[in-house]
Image (cartoon, rainbow, N blue to C red; front, top):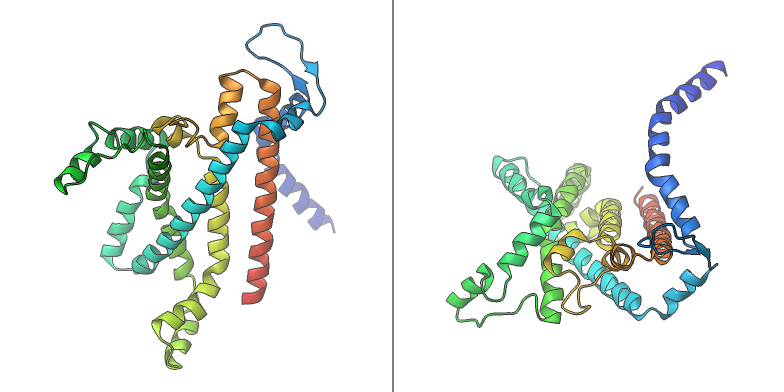
Length: 295
């Protein structure tokens, strides 16, 4: 009993610095945002006293058409980008799931988009997709294709930011899936081969069910991360043209640092955090269920 208490005390002692740091950098700002969400406050007006408005900031969300547009854009962006990244990433993982030198070299090359700063990626692709001087239209000209207004046309701008996100993060999905594939028990695949299963049957009946818990974690991380996308889109289109590529983080940023509406921004942030928490809980329960089915 004494040893157990000592171990417990040591555990909390080692965790204390991290818990204190997280409380200062995450918990306190979150609680202050919750407090601020019940007030009306313009941060560009010095010495202004916050005015208590109750749930007015939260009720305002139901009639905010720009918020509804940004939410729809974000949901579509997250669903399509994550679906493409998981499908392409799993296909790449099946190819790269090897210990040979060529697979290691290709994996290292695929990591380049992951380690680049999002602002640098957005700036680079904005220059490449420029309608008049961009290299993409220059190369398309050799194929006899007319210049495409990638970033000034609403539909093409949506496609452009989507493809850039897929290009940047598909390698990350592939590397995680490679790790998951290499951790699979080889006996299951060998048993399926002995039973005369085809490669397609092995993938759908053996490999995919075993790797599904890893895929669920990948989908959860990518889905929540896709909802937070900001840097790349801000530097590529700044939410334009019009409201075509305006995402929730861009909208929250504008409310806080462009219109200086601290109360409404805090309410938006609280709802955003709660929504992402519920989404993460759903994925974790789904993963637990799949693990129980596998084992």
